Length: 484
Ligand code: 2HG
Ligand code: ZN
Image (cartoon, rainbow, N blue to C red; front, side):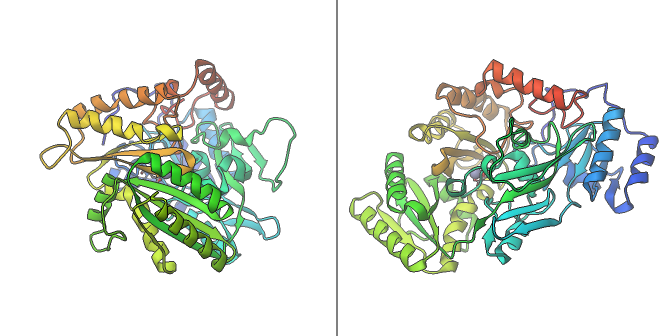
């Protein structure tokens, strides 16, 4: 775990005492409070997914209702107790763990589906519903949750909205800024904004809910979500192919949009290094292609008519092979095969994270998307840091969502060193700024990118963001020490 050289505990935050604990016990039952002296017991709440950050909280509150969240926030605000809202704690930038002794406010016990309207597709649930369960519920009602992530078994609906995660099908279903129809949010002073409505359109002035989408719990605690679920596609298919350079990846993307059009639902890429790591990681699985390539693309289609979709996809595959857009490609034979092809994409993040690693999640124009990975890899390689042990870096790889202009640069390491860090930052951020990209496409800013907003946001934008923070959270008690 990293130390926190850049921050010190704010002295105006109160240290929890027995009066506070008595109050929490008066409003919560025993299974809604976890207080422990041993850090082992609290480890999962203090430690982030990547195991890079570790807080020192000794108190986790797990209320089971919005009213209780409201009481907790009001009390904490009145008494200047700092609070970190937490969902499934799968975030990748250190946004959902405490830094010092902040109270962890877990939404885990708020895990009920509230309602579903099969006519409009409006799905309402508590913030703590696990994404997998939302998917299952909607699946049983012939719909799908409009977002899927590799961390679906752990992440919460509220956490995902708070992060504004993008996921694997944003290309088809759009971002949460469009899909979320309403939110229920508890403000730091305990007030509840209950605009968990079900309207597709509502043009009555400022769209306040947008502020909480992607705010990472810095201005309010999301307790309920109303979201537009899509009708469940009846037919899924996928092709997996090998491509020689990133220009051709873009040509293929253009071709896929034009020829697969309404059934295209994902267009993902992986470079050679990320697939090599994944082949090692998935030892027992047979790789679907015969040869090695510089890039791999997974194209997913989903539609309403299997025969129609397969015809389209087969025609696309033959014409792409004929015009030499890719040298090798396979189409899924059945559903199990389709799942297997996706496994090669979904397993890249865990494959890169065996001993740990550095991650950068960036948006760039498509023509520049892969260049950041080339520039960084060259820099680390020239310093002699990549290769077999004892070199510290196993590989530096790039993969991500072509359809969204989003690359994930992962540097898989044997050990974390100051030398690697010095070569990576601020180089990566300066590179992104020079190309007018974003230093966070979908993972957020959190603790990791604290102090780096200016690479993607202007001074005026940062000032507005600070104004918003001050307005909603004048005491600064909510998710302190993070990006804002
Ligand atoms: C993905 O696209 C996720 O697989 C995770 O956003 C990416 O771990 C990563 O860098
Ligand atoms: Zn991603």
